[in-house]
Structure formats: structure tokens, C-alpha cells
Length: 288
Image (spheres, rainbow, N blue to C red):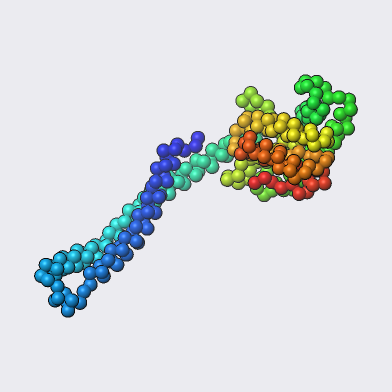
């Protein structure tokens, strides 16, 4: 269970206040001691002052002298108070970090328990669904007979993308290819899952699409895949980033590519799009 906001705020306040007091312990005495020299005056100038002026100056010199004597003690007190607050805050911060590490490890262990390789039937199910999208067949209908070659090409493109991901995943990510996640009444068939090895980086849910129907069909395929990827991310419990990789036979223009990337970006800050041809796969890089 993550630390409560109140606990986090108190820990941050203790450490911030401690640092402030330590800085003040150095700065404040320096300012006081600097001001004591402002009232220095020669005896000749002092003799020329009126009795009232002489009395006022001597009074101020007395105050400055007393402040100068007390300044080191005040600085020592501020330093001790700041060090005490930091000493109180650091163990709380360490406990919070340990609690957060334990929570993340529990989430990771649960994720791995829910994860399994996809069966051949599930892999074929995903490809057949992609084939229906490619030719715009209604959901639930079998792909056309002519889709056999497309299915073979799509499977080859997916294998090529996964091979490239395996090259670029480490050391920051652990790649899991063609996995199914089951639990809490949901089943997610993921083309690939990049599990972060670094606390500051999110996991990456990868959706791979293959299209050879031409650029006119590409926008629709990206739109459908975007909605699918958002559903996957909604059912995924850990912090995640969605990465849609579309392998196309025909390379789009830069203008078309920019328009599709803008469409993806405006729908969610946690989505990324890569459009590549089979010849460009070696240029594929992680979107982090």
C-alpha cells in the first residue's frame, strides 16, 4: 500500500525545514557580523557629534556588539535544529522508499503470476482479427480465403518486429513476447510487453499491426489499433505507455506520418506511434 499523502508531505516538510535552518545557520550570523562594522567610527568623528547623536550611536554600537556576540550561538542553534529535523526526516524517507519498493515488487510478482505465453489458437485469433480489419469484414466473420497470404506476411512482420525489440529492450526493459494476462475477469492478448527494470520508467504495452492495403487504409487501421491499445492500458494495473507499431508495405510521406502521429498524441499523452516498412525495422527505437 503506498504511503499516504499526509505522510509524504510531513516527510518532505521535515527535510525541507531542516535544510532551510542549516542554510540560515550560515547566512544569518554572517549578515549580523557584517552589520556590526557599519557603526564603526573614529574617535575624532565621535567627538564632533552632538551629545544626543553620540548617545544614539553608542546605543546602536552596544546593540550591534551584543548581536555579534550572540550570532555564533544563534547560528549553532539553527544548525542543530536543522540537523535534528533532517535526522527525523531521513528515516521516514527511507521507510517510505522501502514501502514503495515492496509495493512495486508485489505488483511485479502478481503481474508475472497472471502472465502466460499465448497459445497457438490465441495467436491465430489475433491475426485473423487483424485480417478482418484489413479488409473491413464485420467482427465475428471469418477472414476471406484470399487472406491466407496476408496472414503469413503479418506473422512474418510481427516476428521481425519482436526480433528488433529483443535487440533494443535491454538493459532497461525485460521483453515478453506474445503473452496473455488473465485475472480480475479480464484477458489481454498482448503482442509484446516491455517490463521496466528501472523504477522511473513505465512498462510499455506494444501493439503490432501489419497493413498492405495502401495508405488510404492506414488511417483507419491506426484509429482501430489506438482504441484497442487504450483498452489494454485501461486493464493493465502498472504504470504503462502504449506503443503502436505499424508495419506497412508502402512508406507514407512525412506529412501523412505527422498527421497520424498527431492523431495518436492528441488522444493520450501515454501513446506512441511508429510507422515502419520491413526495410526500416533496424531503425526502430524505444519511445522513451
